[in-house]
Image (tube, rainbow, N blue to C red):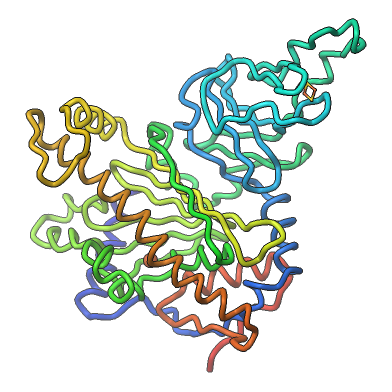
Length: 413
Ligand code: FES
Ligand SMILES: [Fe+2]
C-alpha cells in the first residue's frame, strides 16, 4: 500500500478514536431476512455467484513448485489445481474421462501423475491422459481429446483464480479494479501456505460474511478476546466497485503518536481486511495473510462452510521452524528460547493469533449468526437494521441484491 494511503487511513482512525465517533454512512437500512432463508434466492446465488462467477481458490503458496497440487470441491465444481512441469498454474475438472470418477482424492500434495482409483487411467499435471490399462481390451482411446477437462485459470498478484465454466472469460484484473495495484503491494506471492481451518455451521453464508462487516461488536461480543487487541467503534472504510477495504485500529496505533509520520505504518497499528465479491475476506499483514472463503451449502440456505487458509511470510516461517527445533513441543508464553528472541516472539504471536482468530470466529461470531439464522427461519422477524456505523453491510447487501435483480435495501427514515 502506498505510504500516503496508510497515512490517510491512520489519521482517519485516530480522528475517530479521539472524537469517540465511528465511521458514519449517514444512513440506516432495513435488510429483509428472507435472503438468509429463501431457497429460491439460495439457488440463484449458487448459480450466479458460485457456478457462474470466478473463484479465488488459493494463493501461489498453495502450489509451491512444479508437481504441487490441491483439490477443492466447495462451489459445486470439483477442481484439481496443479502446477505443471513448466511451473504454470492449471485447473481441471477433477473427473476421469472414462466414467467420471474423481482422479485426485487427497486435499493436497506433490504428484506429477494422477491415477484414477477405478480402472487406473492416468493423467499428467498438465491434464494429459498418459495411461490406459489393457487398451487392446477396452478399445483405443484418443489421447489428444481425452485429457482432463481444463478450466480457465489465472495466477495473478499471488492469487489463484479459476472459473467453474470451461468456456468462460477470466480476468482477475477486471475483478479487482482499482484495488489491483494495492493488493499487489502486499506480495502475497511470497507467502508460504501453513495450514487451514474449516468451520461448518448452521448459518447462511451471508450471515457468516456479515460478521466481518462492522467493528460495532468488538467491545461487546469480543470484549475479552479480540477487543483486548483491537479498538472497536472505529473504522476506515472505502469501496472499490463490488469490493471494499475495511481497516480497524489495533492498540498499537497509540504507539505511533510519538513518532514522525514518515515512520508510521499500518503493520503494527491496524488490521487490513479486503472483501472481494462475492465470498472472500482477505486479511493482510506483514507476517501473515489469511484467505477466508465462505461458501453456501447447496440446497440448504441455513448452512455454510468457511475455509480459513493461513499463509506466513518467509521470515515468519523461519521463525516457526526455529521454534520447533528448540525442542519445545508446545509454544507457550513461558517457553524459554536459546535463539533469537524476535523469532520466538514472532512464532508465538502467530500461533496465538491463529488460535484466537479461529476460536473467536467459531465460538463468538458464528454462534451469533446461528441464532439470527433461527430467528430468520421462524419468519416472524422479517427485517434486520444496518446502522450508520455499519457501511460494509450496506454495500455488501446492496451489491449482491443488485447482482440478483432484487430490490435495494430500504432506507430507515
Ligand atoms: S472411471 Fe476412471 S479409470 Fe474408469
Ligand atoms: Fe467478530
